[in-house]
Image (cartoon, rainbow, N blue to C red):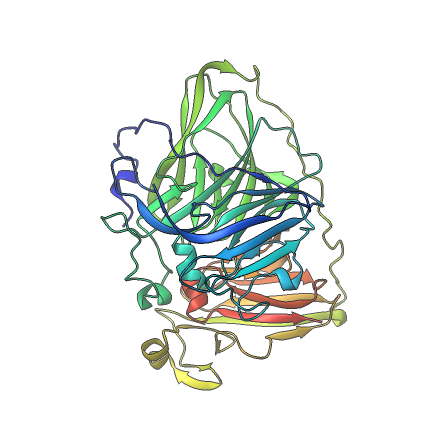
Length: 473
Ligand code: C2O
Ligand code: CU
């Protein structure tokens, strides 16, 4: 259950501005190599007066340092592993060089304790991305290892503030410590994943944003939770979504009920105009299940105004160098079917694990596995599909389970072209939220050679069998 203190009904406003300084943005040029040390730290996730929380963080921070580069600029990060476990960094959503994708066991060996790995790449696309480990991801992310990677447009649209807001979900004990006993718990694996009891915004229990009447904010929203889908609301304000998963929208839109829904790993860039008056405040809320939790406030300066009326135009971000054509001639299309099965309440009779058939009971009991793609549990030696470079690929994903899933493609963004319940949404995404029983076909141009993972980003589902890979030659 979520901490009741975070439930809105009748709870008095908690005052006090956050005392923890935000990690600083790092301006990078190819000449500046930045070391990120994955290490233990202690952070204040809970309110003042409550215990601190021991975490694993990049440079000991949660979120890790925000990395910002201009489009066309290079990212040069040396990962130094001071954790008691091997780790890597995956640059989520970057259409990256395969060797820099950071997937332990597929694109690189995991970096052992005490060792370093040099990540060097130039992100092709502007937008909001993030980084996290890709080894025991379900544990390492739940311990606090993640940070934002922002690639700025050469000429960003006018905004008075450009801020990253990372929403996370933690499972903490009364002592403020991360509940370690439940790491890898079968109940989480076979159900909705690891859902926590405390939500944080930028690593804080309540995080207020200082704004002025009339200001235009560009907010970069990131859901870094292991498994929780979040609806993000700025009470009394009307967001306009201008980018999803880093990629600009040709036609920005006002989301239904002013609520920006993010599955785990998804991002949205929004424009938020501060239409209130000086001295006002508006709650930043997360809607999840039947609860509405306050994460902080937009706190208006008591007297100052940025401008007398909010800006009227809606900016359209410049396009990224995405493939412009997706093949329509069906003879030239590489088709892939991905049938998702398993989990509580529907399961499967049997599935192949490490080359051998097993019944679901045995998989659950002896191997901590509960999910399959096309009847196969976990990664295999051979790819799900070997794809010729340049091909247009249609992946038909069928969710035969009783649970939602956040299907994440490495190396490429994909676009919905068919959906069993609604009109397909014409947005480039790297993570696609699917509800139970849904069938979604996505298309992409396989223009990035290498070995790329395709997995559920509800990390306990990934650990429990929902991961595969495809190869672009
Ligand atoms: Cu965000 Cu395979 O990862
Ligand atoms: Cu899933």
